[in-house]
Image (cartoon, rainbow, N blue to C red; front, top):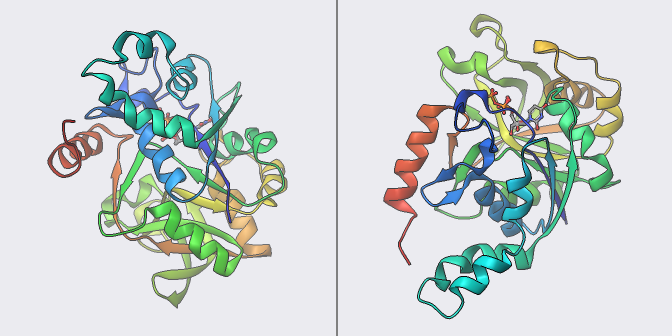
Length: 276
Ligand code: UTP
């Protein structure tokens, strides 16, 4: 059973400037709920009650969001507005929230390594909150992956098919099909040119990682954009051990980009949101 989930939330979110100048991209709301809360709720639903945030400077709102706000509680307690706090109160009661700061933004691999003291020697989930995943038909994506981990006991990456003209924005896998949307990964490339992409299967922001990944990241040199890439570490892990790619069930919205953010907002407003 996987108990911990790491949330790298230290990035600059430059594509959302000026909104992200003094607040975290992950705190931007899709309708009335911050992106990060959707992610935390997905992790909690998968049994990962221990949520570890890798934050950075100027991200204090994240710690405050997952803590009680006495002033607000006092102000609206006993009024008709109290119901609006119930959702986040349930999340706060269920989760354990820990934090570490990434001092320099040296890439996702580096952010994950920065979270090592909060994770220790056990398999863990990684959730990038700017990838919003919804599965109205059943279990959330992290829960689907956690069940696979229990079966295979190796690292798992969530993948989806993307068109050729978008593939260069992703980490891309190649591997042998194992049936049921599963692939044994033998190659991973970060942001390849369309003609060099080994497949059309792109990695999205959901991972289950075995703890040997920390030692692998420590020896992974900076790659694309001079950043320590988790894709490169996973490529090494796939060579020595086992990494499985999983075509998840559900929809994913790229909320790190403005069009994806707007699409998610419309989807949630039309299908998920209701006024209490
Ligand atoms: P992105 O590259 O999509 O996020 O990283 P960004 O850098 O915040 O966005 P732009 O490109 O400037 O608009 C994917 C995820 O990894 C985290 C980010 O917070 C985001 O959730 N990340 C990335 C870190 O925590 N640390 C890093 O050094 C890099």
